[in-house]
Image 1: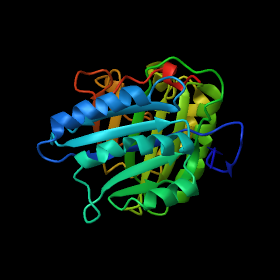
Image 2: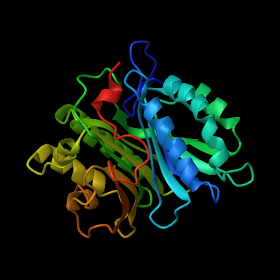
Image 3: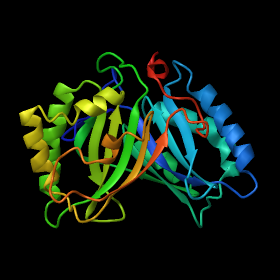
Length: 290
């Protein structure tokens, strides 16, 4: 799959849809400091311009210093597969095993070949998400907006019997986003592999301005479409997940992009790109240049 808009999955030699991989990894006791040094060094060398790796960074969990949240953003499946071979040097630091594997979620331009290759590594469970609706832009889709970007990986519960309506209404919203806000690089929903009534909601913004524009209440058509989409969520249950942003303390990042009643409880964990505790370089438009 090299491109998708939630309704079609097509191959193209001229473009590749970026692949995003996200999840938590456990580091062995006594190896945290060594892991931090090795990860930071590898991330710096892997994300040079032209490498095909747009971002590689990690943050320690706020509650468990041996758990690290990882984010990888590559130009496509081939770039990720090449970089994964270089990351084998990190394997010795992880506590993950065949009996107790860590799990990583993969969104965007993955391929069946990559999924098959990843299955051979039984110490990690890669969960490849097929989009119900939405889009992830190909790297050649227009100019490269200035960063730093914002990453949102959230999980949301859906009302009983509303999954199909959620998908169709989200496609309407994402079509409007794609047409009106060039800085939205990706927005998709996919089924949660562990909860039949929950979806994974991916957001990738080129910068903070793009995030603000995607919830522009002055656009009547967009606001109405978002209201129809949002009505399919079970707002009695919290939205949970992780946000990576230059300014995660902005209150607008922790509120619903749609005014609804009742408002859903928000349980998002945020990490600040560029913070001293961040492992790896801040992703910018430079890493996306050939």
